[in-house]
Length: 458
Image (cartoon, rainbow, N blue to C red; front, side):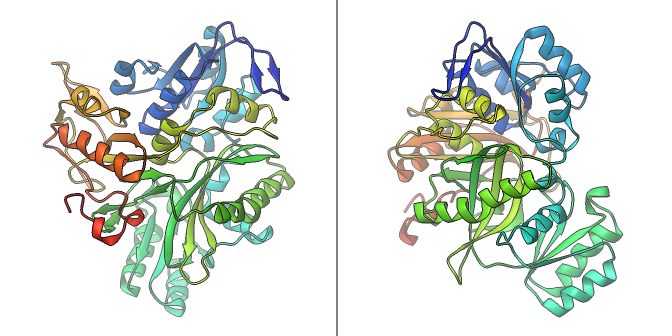
């Protein structure tokens, strides 16, 4: 959660904010939240940024004041903090507090909040709900069926054949999707969710979905309940290993812009996916306010985008590359969304490209060792201009060293005149970091380069 405070006068025509004192509160403590703090701190209309709970890297970066003891699932505690400090906008980073209704309670208390209600957050909280909206409002998505009985799911899988995709219906921390290349893998995924219950209540229902061959892309739009404006394009890398091998993760890297999302395709996505969703949610009585993150597959056969999933918050690590490229006043724009006044608003982006390379604890996305020491982070940011290290899972040990506390730990982000320069800067910084307990993919960005440039050392 990002919190920031201010006294403001708001004008739709000019999108202006007159500021005396201005504070933002960011809810969350990962790399996405660090990037949001970084962008909000640069907003001319923002005097201070709080982050709850935050992490060690955010607290030492100067991008925000961390509030580690604020329980982000305790709405009354968050409201009390906002009232005490005169917080003028709350930005909720992660999905879980949104699904649990934090935005509902804050809005009811009169605190401007960028993030959807619990009802609208069902677009991410329930894949079956998302698919139902798609079917009802004619939004292109992969063919699917929903099951709560393992035998029925397996029979459907047998009829459809492999490859096929099995998804837990609810929130599973980015791990609830299995892309099965054989029937046996698919049956195992069904049993793990419906019989063994590895995801708890999130996996009591599963979606069995056709496998769509193509190239993935991430599309983000800011939404005020009725209007939507697109952000720049981005593309992330979900698989843990080089060459897109190994299990899915929360994301091992990303870059922006994404060449696969041409301006023509972006227009198609807005007109055929984003705007029908915004209109549909309004008609369903749960207007969506926040960022709508569409996970897309550009179908290899048709060349057209299909909606694979919705997230109701900024992507991680895509947020990192978007926030370093954003030149507009983020605080003003998010306030406009909260007030239903996005119509006519446009965003300014820096030219060139940005890339983020995620460094993760060895063993991720499986079990991994915690509290391994990380060194040379300051040196990494100094290897080249426009390099920023965003912290996702760090703390301090008793000697004041940074230590890893999560799976994905750091997001090494760089801007360049083009993607090649951004890539070179990012990997130069990665290689400066001394972390024997970490690893990273060495091929982030390969889809955007000719095959001869696949290797960074070529």
